[in-house]
Image (cartoon, rainbow over all chains, first blue to last red):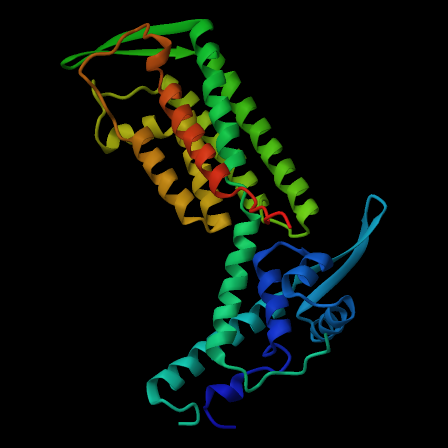
Length: 107
Length: 229
């Protein structure tokens, strides 16, 4: 493994939709499934798949319940999720500084 | 829409800027700064008749170079702690209800807890100061700061600082700093009326600032309506 920042990217997090889920969850105490779906413009099935990946990795917790008669699914970021998001952002910044500094991402 | 796979080759500039835009959008949607400001403005205005029509104590004693008089109302010590705690309960309930409706939970607990702690602590300090008045005739410098800090206006301002942090709201931070400066910086014209007219109470100025701030934030944070088809 080299010191290139691209090697520090976690495939679970380095993905547009999953990065979006973690970002939204980071800004909120918890976030509802429908909010994620509308903000990320996803189908329910697609969002469920990404949530499953993140939950399996221990980056989020999923809580199901009811608000009145309406079923709700709440997503909360775990501490591991916070750390993973911070790491992803740091690696992206590092990668950008490499690209901007040398003109090519590989150098 | 299909399931997307990893984007190892995605432009990091775009990923990072999308992430920032998303975070900003969520923060903006969570903000309801106008509500606490309007609640506190209402408390400030409601305190005017409480202070005006409740009994006052006037105690004077000699100090080197003159004398100090303290004028205080027992009702203030009852009204403000109860009003502030009820205000924070109302604000917390409002944010929780709004969070449920929008599907995105707001971290209002630190603000509510900080607000109640500040309100109770400063009431305690104000009660202590009642029995330990300043030794100087005009405590204008840093020595007078604790006496000005132990006031309902300062309690509201300190809690608004926590709200500005919780909402990551720079506009509220600026408004709160200006408000706190007005509350804490001593302004004197060299004389004090024992029975000033109601419109010269600090609560009038403080309530007006909070009201104008609340209206400003309500206009700025009103939901954008999509044009009719």
